[in-house]
Amino acid sequence: MFIKYTCSATELERDGFCQNPFFECLIAEVPEEHKSKEGFTIVGYAFYFYTYSTWKGRSQYLEDLYVMPEFRGNGIGKALLSKVTEVGKNKGCVRLQLSVLNWNTPSLDFYAAKGAQDLTVSEGWHFIRFDGKHLDDLAKGAPKN
View (cartoon, helix red, strand yellow):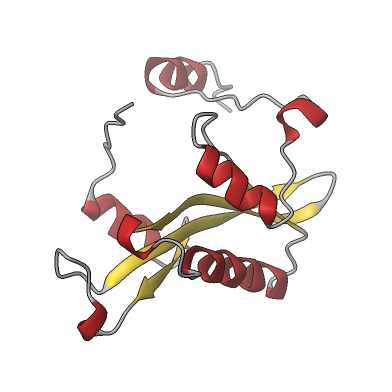
């Protein structure tokens, strides 16, 4: 499955490095002598933002947790996940939520091993999205005053 990315570097910079950022991001960096085969020292990242539950209160949503394949299995993903959680706990967040595609069993197993609950079956949640024309149509129906 290929995903077409439409968010530009300019949009990421605008939305993440402003007065009230829409997201936060932590990176994993290795020393120059351990850089990737492609020459990168940044080998992973955790991209997250804050949400609010009327039932539970302050929450975090982990949009992306990524570690370059050649660096997986070294604790980098766990360290990023733990740091995101620490940041959230320090801001009063009571939970961390995320979505994982059903075919991504390595990630499902990774999160389950850390104590994550899969709410798909246990609570019956469906992940719903509006975008494109449907988002535009929905916004056009908003009251004008």
